[in-house]
Length: 437
Image (cartoon, rainbow, N blue to C red; front, side, top):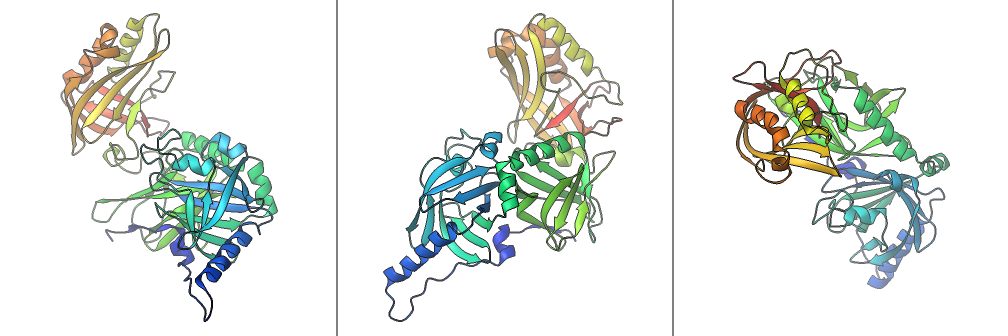
C-alpha cells in the first residue's frame, strides 16, 4: 500500500495514442505519401466548423487550455487560459503545415503559444527555456473528433478535440478566465481541502495552484509515510481538465468542476468525489511547508499588513507594531519569510516612501525533523535593510536571537492554514502568518 500514488503519462495514455506509421503502399512514391499526410492534416485542421478545444502540457510548468479556429490554410485565431488578456482577446496568427520526417504543424508568428515558448521568462516562464513548450508539433494521428500531436523539442502532448457551437460561444465569452477567477475565489475561502477514496486509508489532501497550473494529492500511507504526487490541469469551456491525470490506488482522476461553490473531482469512469473541508489541516505543516513543497513562504497579508486571528499568545504582533511605528511616515506594507532554495531563506519587508521598496535580509537555514535553524545573516548591514535598520532592528533581533524554531500549524477559529515558527527557547515567541506559494 505504500506506493499508492503514481503519474499517468498525459492523455496519450488514456487515448491509447500511437504514432501512425507512414508506410508506402506498393508503387507509391515517398513524396506521394508525404503529400497525402500533409493534405490530411490541412483538411482536418479546417474541418471543425466551431473550432477546437486544445490541451497542451508544458515541461516547465502545468497544463494550458486553448481554443483554436483555423480559418483557412494560413490563419488561425486563438484564445488561451494563460492570462486574463489571452482568455478574452482573440489572437490571429499564421501557421504552416510542413513535412519534417512527418506531417507537422508550425505556428510561425507571435501568438499565445509563443508566449509559452519564449525563452526569456517574460511571460511567466523560467529563463532560458520559458515554459519548456513548443511551437512546432508532429502530427501523430486522428481518432474520431480528436487530433493528437506532440511537440518536436519538449515532447509534450497537444490534443485537439472538435468544439461544439456552445463551447465556441463560451470561449468567445471569456469562459476560461471566468472559471479561473472562480477557482481563485474558491481557494481563498475554502481551506484544508480533501477527498476520500475507496481503498485509501486516510483523507487525501487536494491542492490546486492557478499560478503553476498544477494540482497535488497528498495522503498519509498505512506505514506513516506521506505519499505526494502532482498533476497538471487547464480550463476548458466546460470544466477543469486534468491534462496530466493522477492515478490513486487504481482510480484515474480526469477532471473537476466547480458548481454552486462545490468543487467536485471526477474519475475516468465519471464517478464524483466532492471536495470537503477539514477544521484543521489534513497533513502536518512539515509536509506542506518547505522550499519544494506546496507552501514556500508565509507572512502578513499584502498591502494590509494584517496577521491572521489565532488562538495563541505571542509577542510577535508587538514586534511588528514596533516596526510599523518606527517607519513613521514611510508606509510599512507587509513582511514575508520565503524559502529561496535548499539552504537559503529571505526575510522581506515591503514599504513605500517615494516609491515601493523591499528591504531583504538573507539567512542560511537547516530544516530537519520539523525544526528550522537560522544562521549567517547577510544583507542586514547593506542595502535597503541597512537604510531602514533603525526601524527593522527589533524584528531582526527577534528573528536572529531566537534562531531555532519548531514548525507547526497555528490554531484558529476560521480553520484556515496558518504557518507558525515556535521558538524552541522562548514559548512566547511565535512568528506566524498566511502561507503562500
